[in-house]
Amino acid sequence: MEVTLAAEKIFSIGPIPVTNTMLTAWLVTLVLIAFAFLSTRKLTPVPNPLQNIAEFAVDTFQDLVASVAGEKTKVFLPIVASFFFFILLGNYFGLLPGIGTIGFNRIEEGHRVFVPLFRSMNSDLNTTLALALVSVVITHYLAVKYLGIKDYIGKFLSLHPIFLFVGLLELIGEFTKILSLSFRLFGNIFAGEVLLSTASSKIFAFIVPIPFYFLELLVGFVQALIFAMLTLVFMVILTEKHASEH
Image (cartoon, rainbow, N blue to C red; front, side, top):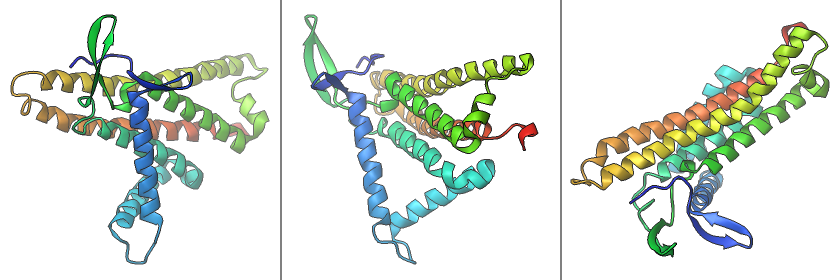
């Protein structure tokens, strides 16, 4: 099976094409919503298994966020945790049997092409770019909320030549964050998809990919954590006032 760089179109909703990575993202979203609903529907002093898992996950991540965000944890936690669990589940969905292998054939330019019905959502640059844009937009929204519009603009623009130069560099750095967040996640997940596809197409296809699956489990977790923690750090830095403003 050949892994293409672009996600394959499955169908269209009006003028909007729906790709296999979009279907996976929708499925991941539904699973997370269903889990959140079922685990919090009937909260009890003695938690049921789903409630226990949810409480453990939230408590663990809250401690991690609190170590960086401090008093802003209550605001930052839902955002950072949403990124982490959405990306993590999306990465792990891409490793499930049938993802990338169950699909249909269609004719393109006179050739029969196999189109998988589902595909790892983060192997699509459109997905990771959208996540990076949301991360940066939310970060700047919170910066305005905590600093006020005047101090927020003052982070990037100043009448002092040196501060103005530093501010412009920081402004350029905000655009590079989008590239850094999106390409890091996309590159690692797409490379893993290609690696697994190549290993599975060789002889002993049921044995050779096993070590790579364990590697991808680790990579999927690490990449989700990196994206979430970088978002958290960016939020903390951008919402902090300059030392002279305290």
